[in-house]
Amino acid sequence: MRIDVITIFPEYLEPLGVSLLGKAQERGLLQVHVHDLREWTTDAHRTVDDTPYGGGPGMVMKPEPWGRALDTVAPPDAVPQPRLIVPTPSGRLFTQEVAIELAKEPWLVFACGRYEGIDRRVIEEAGTRMRVDELSIGDYVLAGGEVAVLVIVEAVGRLLPGVLGNADSVADDSFAPGPMANLLEGPVYTKPANWRGREVPPILLSGHHAQIARWRRDQALRRTAERRPDLIERLDPALLDEHDRAL
Ligand SMILES: Nc1ccc2ncsc2c1
Image (cartoon, rainbow, N blue to C red):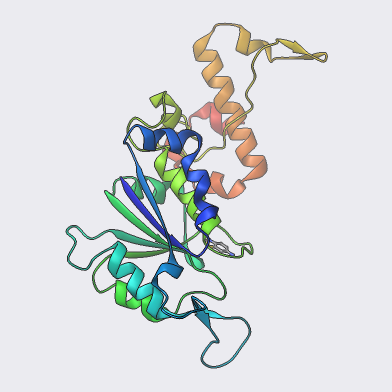
C-alpha cells in the first residue's frame, strides 16, 4: 500500500516511521510519503489560509495550494486514482469496519486540514476524479487532522498482510469478525503469578483451554456490558449462547 499525506506540519507524521509501521516500511509492505502543503504556495509568506467568506471566526485553508498539491501528489491521469481521505470532525465515524475497508486499497492520500477547515471546493473538485471519504475519529476538539491520520494509518497499516508478526493478533482484535466480534477485550495477565499479593485468576493457570476461552468470553461480555452497553445492543443475538444470555 502507498500512503501520501499532505500537511502543513510534516513533522507531526514522523511517528509513522517508528515501530510497527516503520518496520513495515523497511520491509516494503507500506510506502509512506509526507508532503508539506506550503511547497505549493506561490507567495513570499507561503500563505495557506485566508478569512472565511460570510464572516465568522478563524481562517479557512485556501483552495489554490490544495489544488496544486493534489494535482502533483495524485495526478489526474494516474490509473488507478487513489482514495482521498479527509479527516474532519464532521465526517463519517472511523471504525474497525472502515479500517478493514481501507486496508484493501492500493493507494490512500490523506489531506490534513487545519484552522476551520479546507475550502469546500477542494473536496468537490477532487471528487470529480477520485473517491473522497471525510472521516472523523470521534467527538472531541482537535487542532487539525494530523493526529487523526496517525490513528487511521495505524489501524489500517496493522491489517496489511505481513505487518503483524502473529496473524492471530488481528483475529483476536476487539472488533474483528468472529466469536469476540464487537466485544471489548477482557483483562490480560502475565508472570509473575503473584504480584504484590495479587494472584492471577486460577482458571488461566489451569491448562483447560475450553474453560479458559469461556472465561475470557465471559470477561469480555461483562466488560462490554459495563463500559459500552451500546455495543451489547448491536450484538447479533445468533452469536449469543444460553450461557452468554445468563450472564
Ligand atoms: N476536532 C476533531 C475531531 C475529530 C476528528 N477526526 C478527524 S479530524 C478531527 C478533528
